[in-house]
Image (tube, rainbow, N blue to C red; front, side, top):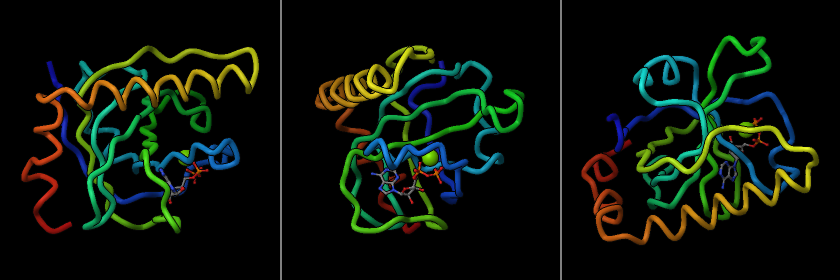
Length: 147
Ligand code: ADP
Ligand code: MG
């Protein structure tokens, strides 16, 4: 099993699917990071820890899914950091550790249903990451070295 899985990469522009308008911005990794994912990391929603540049380590939820832009032939990795940032951080290095799996990807009948599901994922991530074994990963050297 590949969890916990550590990775890092530059934050690139996504496809403007309006995540920010939903109040849930998702920072995208470049294809090179997605291509390095171990084969046994399936699509779906994950939780873990994240840090932007040399900033603090926050809880995160990540969606790994098929990218409609590439006619669903390419995966994307989108991280929502559970923190209010004053500014966007395109071009900065995002470090994440994926700690656990929440649920598979699915479609929703309405935007409201999607938002309810994502907020549920965020609450689950917050709770799970309070477990002592998960808190240890927040202090991992991976996050201490300079970005
Ligand atoms: P895009 O389609 O370019 O990914 P989004 O609407 O998903 O656009 O917004 C993502 C961007 O918002 C990130 O790349 C980052 O610069 C910024 N951002 C601000 N706050 C957050 C946050 N808490 N989590 C993730 N990204 C954030
Ligand atoms: Mg996004």
